Image 1 (cartoon, rainbow, N blue to C red):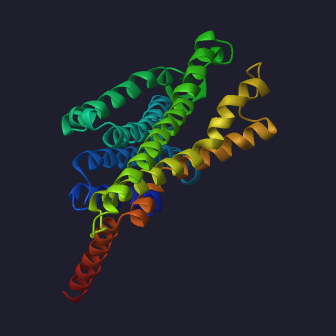
Image 2: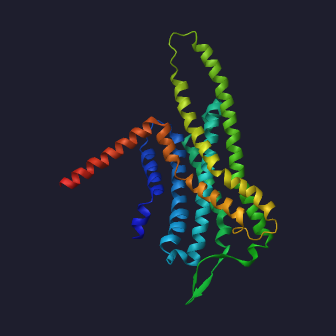
Length: 313
């Protein structure tokens, strides 16, 4: 019953589909781009598992399960924070990689390599794990039955401790305020460079009989993907950014953070949109990339054919 409930979740399915298609390496994307997109899809899948399935759906369909044991619950919250953090910063790393590849050709040769991508993704993952360690120690059991701690609630010093106030303030900056600012800066630099180079290339090719420019076509496809992912991320995270920037002013005494009227509504809407961003990238790949759509059609055709053969047998 538990497994069927998880498998039927469409958010889980789309991320798995994206990982499988990208891992095949037949989408016409460079190795670096493929690595970043795979990492982003894996992080989105982790968000779906740790936050949507193990937290929200678990509370809805399985109000009593081993996931509500205090140590497991604390670990789940920490892992959810790691996966969300990785999802955000992988997007930043991908944006910077495209900015470097397009705007700085000399730097591109040293930076846009498989080894560099692996190191960057590993550093982001390890940094997210280290930053999420305090979250594991934030919670205490709500009730203890037969020496077994159940459920999670914040420790009493959470509302008054300077450490937790500083930690949450830093977290609101590191994720998502700083990432969004960085993405905007990188995209502005990329757009300015594209506009400048496009004018030069058009002027040069205007004297040629062959007006086709394969390089500009490939660059345009890459830019469509980059800007679609960036715009999707910024729009769906903007509510959370507004909440993280303003709630301290609205609730400066650090009380009733989660249950006070409009603040609570804004926070919950932001969470829903944030989780939605973990399932939209696959749709963006399908809309913007012809070869991704072709691979998706090929996979669906294969499954239908395989299913037909199994029924006949």
